[in-house]
Amino acid sequence: MRGLGSRITGGLTIGSRLACDDNSGAKIVQIIGMKGSRSRLRRVPATGVGSVVIVSVKKGAPKVRKQKFWAVIIRQKKEWRRPNGMRVQCEDNAVALVGEDLLPKGTEIKGAVAREVATRFPKVAGIAQIIV
Image (cartoon, rainbow, N blue to C red):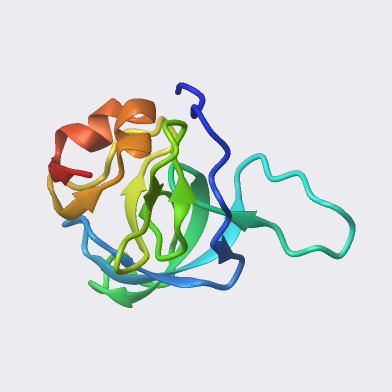
């Protein structure tokens, strides 16, 4: 897993609900934890595109509901700045479920994937339809 070229603005916190854009069976997930989040006491940690989070499936197929999974954030509504100065913003928040080895659970991703995710997780980018 490579590092990102710039600091991504955190637009999602614990408790945020997102769409799951892969075909793993989950439809709506909720963030319940973040991998490697270091924060101040009583501050709610924020995360953004390209981060690995722990999610709970709220809506979806019965075999995946009420279970915890690892996920990669592939899109966020809050705009972030790329190293070349361009600001990027998506129309929704979305994740793709991954295993503990950071390989995708599904076989295809329906929507777009941010370029930051593609450089950091090449296997997730390999099943995406478009990279923005």
